[in-house]
Length: 137
Image (cartoon, rainbow, N blue to C red):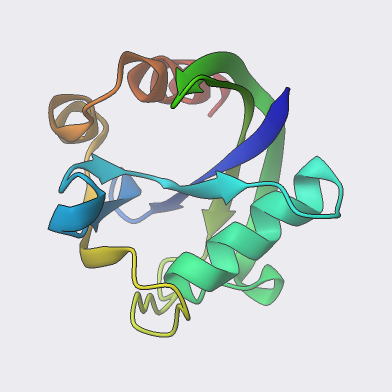
């Protein structure tokens, strides 16, 4: 079974805000957190890497790390994948850039409230991850 990670970034301003990325049209055009396939690395290192590649957020910006937020399986093109979800609280002034990724995957990003995130997310598994994270913070 293939392994993937999801890296939910969030920050606290007046309320908690969550970072969503909009995939380019050829990759579905939907909103989701950072994430992707695991390379030759630990789950946590993969989550850090995906967050850095897709948002330019690095470890120095992270205030708190939540491991094992959620875990689920999905199947795509007859390949089963287990996805492990991590969450990272970042400082409120953290800069985000989706344009440094060598693999163009996203066309837009937004910091949104918890309720807006649940409305914008396409996949039920993503929504479940956000619900579990909300209970942790």
